[in-house]
Length: 100
Image 1 (cartoon, rainbow, N blue to C red):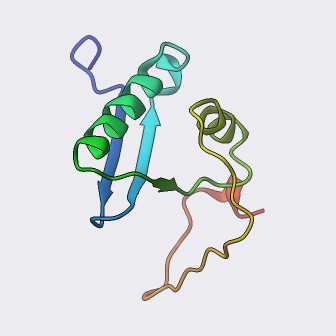
Image 2 (image 1 turned 90 degrees about the vertical axis):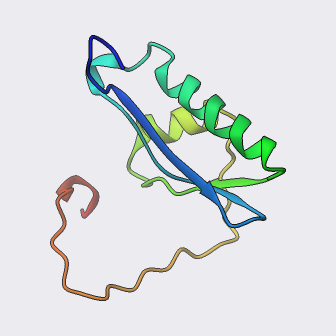
């Protein structure tokens, strides 16, 4: 929170074995202030308390800033996995910059 407004969020959980960061975002005008790092640190500390030893996340390849951030936090790129989706209903993309 900054001036009564939410400026950063992180959604993290686990399945008892592996943690997953489902979503993380910092308001564009509040980036590079350490907010994202603090959110990640808090989420990882919470996972460690649950004795979770490995964490995964998914980031769009075209999200250069996001990928640079995750690398700066020690997350490495895995190239041995295939990420798969299955739509259960017709969906309209709201992020056309990633569809290209």
